[in-house]
Length: 137
Image 1 (cartoon, rainbow, N blue to C red):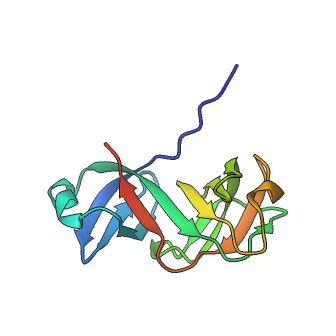
Image 2: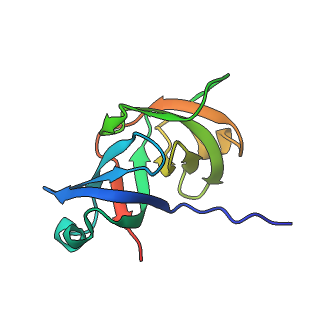
């Protein structure tokens, strides 16, 4: 039996302005602020409704974690400290897809390789400023 991995995040669009979006993650208190790759004015009519998109970020040094759950700090704002489980790796692009409350593609830090991480491993790391949201249909 095969499992399909999805990199699409679903959230409620709370705001779209100044090149950023704020997503509320359903069932949580998370209000994640991300730079919007598309023109946020195209998303403005969807405020208060569910939207789908792909989240990308650049990780600073990634570390294997021994325990704990998945989280994004702060709960309200730009992601800074993140912990989650590896869902998939993209060796060619040197990036990791991790479940960190939402699926997030993480560009691996210089000096590290996506091949250093395997599915199911728990990671924690700091996120470089500028995590993005790319809307999908």
